[in-house]
Image (tube, rainbow, N blue to C red; front, side):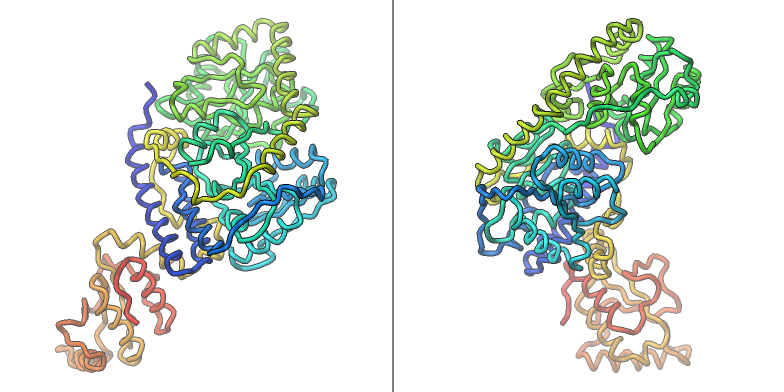
Length: 614
């Protein structure tokens, strides 16, 4: 029986509590008609749910808030008859190393149409390969961060670029509210294909997918069952793969300490895909493989050395080689006699690259097929349907057969290369692309109001959380990176207020010396304190006061009289020589005597559900 890690349910519950506060932020901005606020808080919520699993794969509450904010009473219509020969590819960010960027480059290289690329939130340097691919296609490349400060500005700019295209392909990050908003601005637009490159996790964009394009058929069950996607809006397009051209590198073998002619198994994966989940991880699999094949060495590319690999290395000296991140995995694949799929979470691109290199691909799939988390153990077309092992020992026996029989390795490698190449390259892939485009052209515009509801699955969420290795629930502000400078003081205050609201604790503010010389500022603070029962104001004694605090009392009474208040109804005021040790100011230290910190405090109190005085 596969069970999540013991701490996973508690972490998942805390993730969900944090997430629901972020959803409330989205809804509060929607109720106020603040479209920019809706988009920013939607980015924050979606990025949190992506990186800190909450048991959801979509949230149509958030999507409807975004769509209604930008669409208003207008309508969206799809024009599927455009034939100008242009496709617009939309990415959030592109990377020099990353499967989804390679997917877009491979897509453009095989599509006979002109391909334009637009980036909604590029935070780092553009990869040269993407720039070259756009130029080779005759297209244009644009960065929306250069077109407008706000997210709504970017969404409007993106929609204008859509107007020149026959079709739009979204290969965006799970947090991308700009793409969702642009697709739903009122008017006529081309069909939109959403590339589901993060199919096992949460993402924002169901309401932007006229056609949801999966890269493996097994994702359909989650698309329809948990995301709320209509079945007729799901298609499949295998990842585009180039022929493998790297030659074996004897120098690399020497650097790795591999004996000439000794067999090698290779795995390429990020650390989180091989970390232990539900009690097992990749090191358990490698242990059994090495036990059954004494002459074999396992090279783990992208995997960092840690205590588990060190212990395994002591058991099998010189035969366990975690080499960490490398700029190009191809030279390592050229060394491989056998490719081991990562466990407990499989990779998407590198097993296909191994197959294109003619390397037999072996995998362990020990989750029940009716378990939603079984998606973590499924493959791409071309690999899907080939025999897989259901236990580590069974996999180890399969590896041993290949290690001991070079002719079997050659036959298996040739067979898997032919199977993958037929679907992931050449005319076979291009025909599937045209079928996807035709399917998208035939569909009306997606409407979030006509979709089903997002479904929560706590066990699936806990399993994904266990696979990702998350040990604690992160604070939401730590996952605000995609907003950059848009996560401004006002939004930080709003988030602080939302998180503070349910604690039941008072919010303490320590006032600087000489407050008596700033009566207007202090009066405004006292007004907030009177209207907010949980605001605790800590005042120092007035300068030059006596031991009875006569001057301080006189200044306070005068201010309260000005406000029509008395010491009995003025809120939680304290005159003390120092701030209480458990103070929780919304800004560091003592706020300056200016409007900004009081504005921020008012927003904190408002976000926390405290009455905000005018």
